Length: 64
Image 1: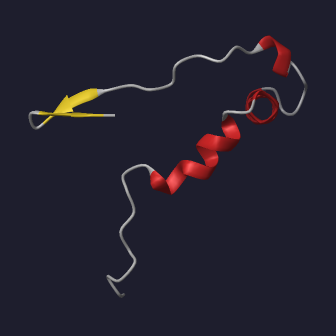
Image 2 (image 1 turned 180 degrees about the vertical axis):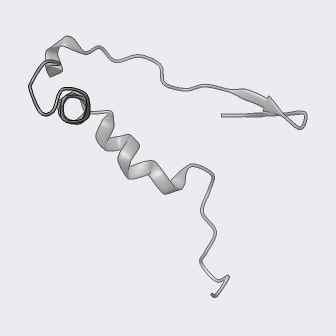
């Protein structure tokens, strides 16, 4: 496996998923699919946007 062009910043693996799940329609569909067997219990208009960033300290450094 070549090391060339293999660098990805931390968290880049799931960036597309994070962007998709940030949309209330997509998040509601996923939640309803897994939790309620596809029945539309959670509707997009029931959801509210909040701060999703979190931070932790490890090895003397703060990470996000």
